[in-house]
Image (cartoon, rainbow, N blue to C red):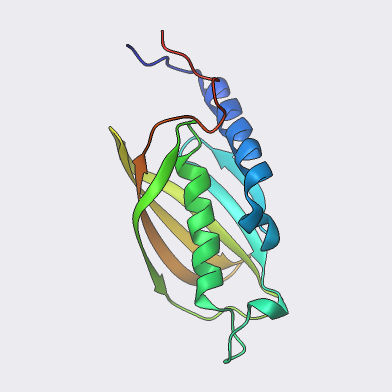
Length: 154
């Protein structure tokens, strides 16, 4: 079986359709108020505004919320090819605090994709400002498609 090679426009349309399908089922991202700003093959940019129920006892954004945003951007980037892909490992470094009312941006970029595995770097920053976290995710492709039956063997 050979892989069908998509034109850049087809690959972009597939990435967008995949993100739309994923987001329609992504109750966690919806509950946290995440928004997809853009998605493209191997990349994604999501935002989330830090709400009062997202701050910890130090009155700064809980690290788990920042991790969730980064992990979600990672998911949209690595699933942008419509091949079911999950995290096999991830690591985050917190660099600066985010506060209630801040809008965070998580930008995911594919660094490597070969076979069933990939590596993605995600930067989380306050919109237009400081970087608050750096996240690296390792992906593993499992069976199936995000939009079932969309892709077929040649």
